[in-house]
Image (cartoon, rainbow, N blue to C red; front, side, top):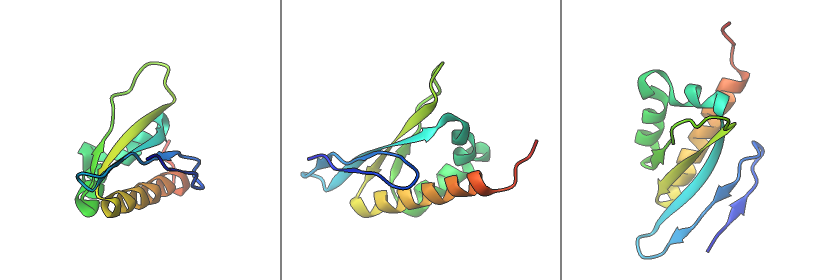
Length: 101
């Protein structure tokens, strides 16, 4: 069973439900230029999101000529929902926060 949502950040969520375990796996695209801020210094931001949500979040290595990376988020529906919310908040902070040049 596959569900797709279109939130205001124009990301596509895909929810393949794994009924035997109650776990879900989601794909969450993030623009390449935002990934560093999402991860944070020494992984501090993504570690906090993982800890607070309880979801497993995999970030693939950057590939040449790619403009986005697709995060894989897996966990219970509640953990995934919280992870998405926290990721959205962090991305909004990155996009609207002060810029350093």
